[in-house]
Length: 227
Image 1 (cartoon, rainbow, N blue to C red):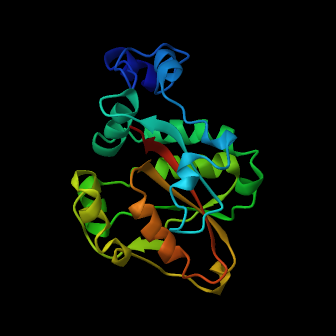
Image 2 (image 1 turned 30 degrees about the vertical axis):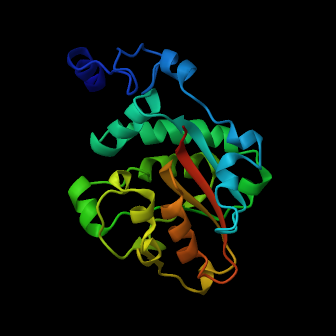
């Protein structure tokens, strides 16, 4: 009843194009879902997201749901998720991608989902980690534990999106660390983030996780930058 009243005065709009959502639509309208650029990485184990980490870190699997283009639908979705507190976008993308991933044998061997963490100061500034709802939706869809206490960011840094590749990579391996015990040994971790660009942040997080004896890493992102 209350939701109906709220919707009457503040009707829900599509997070991609801002058109009014129909009663059977949720977060993203049917037209945007049809036009959104899908990677279909889950259909190809040797996809471009997997190849990005050749010679950098050993990964069991790497993929993203969507292609990120400047001024495109996906950029609008990620911007609204990251800076306008529209966390329901992460939930919708997590539910969407879990359907694609759940039958992959490599994903079935995962033990825990690990989000790329925000520094405590950044978390206070933003009020939330933009990948939390994505991770929780994957957790529910894949029946995996979501663990946001294992990996942490040691150093506060400015947003990575405005930095060049060289500056972004400089010293990045010092940004993250892990707090683990023997129960974390020999686990397969699914590292998640919003957008995969150079892969330097994900590489640094993976190096931290690989300090854990016997650890294996897979990577899943909402989107991947695409030229």
